[in-house]
Each structure stands twice: as structure tokens, then as C-alpha cells.
Image (cartoon, rainbow, N blue to C red):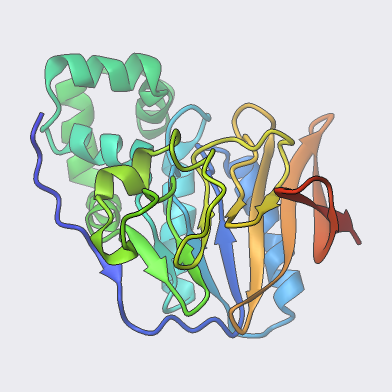
Length: 273
């Protein structure tokens, strides 16, 4: 399938006085809500902005509610950004009717798309044309949100993307497909990038946020582990992490500061506070 999607980069100054980047959510509103509540407490009434790093939908049970929560959060906090993930892209193309039949089947069966459909249709699985008609009639604001998402957000020190960047390619020349899908060639790259890359997409080995020499990884598994994570920045500097998880069905918040103890040459672990 050849679909022309214009690369959108947030080029206007992004205020980093207090900002929270949130990793892959995958339909887990039961984790997103307590995470946002913890962030509100952490911000202590200070103005804040959010960078959602994509994959709001699929796999988890309530993609619709997660889309609504993210949409409302961005409206409440002007300047917040939604970086399009590969699952969000597939969802967007699905409801826009531009997936081939085999791609549509792969999204539904392999990407967790059926869970997204069910969340929008009261737990039912209608025919796909019925679903798209229902979505377009009642959730046009979600479609607008997908259409207005950006490919990356850059600050002086950081580049925020969903999946990663292609080594050796300038940030301004990155292919949108790489920004949403790359793993091999990025995760195993130990050299320097123009800026420290903050990303999700690939679940960390520790299932907690990881700080590497050239990147900060915050996909902590959501649908699989029951944990989603955010990274905290003050004045464009990393200051800590906030994670929300469920233990025996009860939401638990874990906060970490940015004091790093070297675990090995490439990965630093965070210290709980």
C-alpha cells in the first residue's frame, strides 16, 4: 500500500518548563487515569505540557476511552502534543478506508485491532463497514486527533518520537515510517544522535524506564505488564519518572528520580524515592 503521509514535525518552540512524556498506553485507561492523577499531584498546580509518544490504541480493553482522555488532556494543557505511533497510524488508515483487505485483517487479528473495535462498539464486533460508519458518525474528533498528530517533537536537548530514529540520518530528514516502526538498527546502536531520543514502541528489557547513553526508553509493556510510564522534564532537563501499574488489581504509583546508578556501560537504572 502506498499512502502519502506528510511528515509533520513540531518546529515551534516547545516549552519545557514542566513537561511529561508518556509512553505506549495501548487501551489501558485503568493505568492512564491514575498516572495522570499522579502527574497532577507531582506538578503541584504548576502549568504543564504533555507529549504522548503514541500507541494509544489496540491490544488493551478500552482504546476509545484512552483516546478521549488524551484528547481532553491536550485540550486542558495547551501546547501538548500527540506523536503518532504505528498502531495509531494503522487505526487511522483503517477508519479512513485505505487499508488493503490483508492489511485490515492483520490490524484486527495481529495488532489488537479487534479490541479497539470492541471498545468503540460496546463490546460487540460489528462488520467492518458498520464499525467505520459508527466511528465516523460519532467520533470525528478522534479522527481529527489522529490527522493532526505529529511525527516528532524536538527541543534543544531531546527528540521525542514513537519508535526511534535511523542512525546516520539527520533528524530533519528522518523517514516517518522509521519514526513509527524502527527497532533493528536503532535499539542496538550505541553511537551518538544529534539529540537524546525519547521513545516508546519497544518494551524495555527491565519493563521499567531505561536511560541509555543516547536514548531514554519508556515503553514498559502496558497491556502485557500492567505498567505505563512517563518521564519528567524541567527546563529541558531529565528529572525523573512516574510509573502507574496494577498489583492485585490495585493501582500503584512508583516515582523515580534522575539520580542514576550505572548498571552497565549502556544502561542506567533509576533510584526509587
